[in-house]
Each structure stands twice: as C-alpha cells, then as structure tokens.
Image (tube, rainbow, N blue to C red):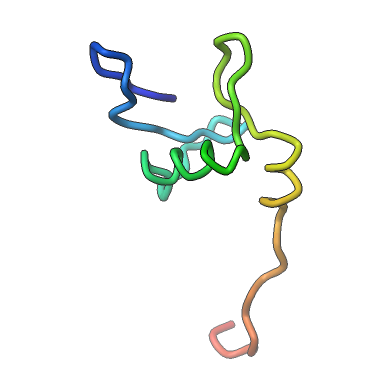
Length: 71
C-alpha cells in the first residue's frame, strides 16, 4: 500500500503478504528497489504485485545457518 502526497509522489510504503500480514522490514526504499528491478509491478491501476521475474528471484531460500549452534 502506498501513501502519496498531493502531487502523487509516494511518501510511505507498506508491504502486505497474500495472507494479509504486514512485512516489518519493508519501507519506501525497499519498495523503490523492488520496483526499479521490476520484481513488482502494477497493471491497470491495481495494487503492486510480484512479477514472474520477482517470483524467481525472491523464492524461498533454505535456512542460512551453517552450524547447529543456537538450536
């Protein structure tokens, strides 16, 4: 969800999952990067959604832990 000023410039971004959960680490800078890389797009005035390229690049990753310490 984008909040825009009177000129239409985005001033705040809030990212939601398909389940309706808000992503805490998603801000306007992250939104702009995703849009610039064409990983998200809006069509016909609809909300921004992940593109096919975005699905490939942002797919779920295995856990990055290298040791079992901390389990």
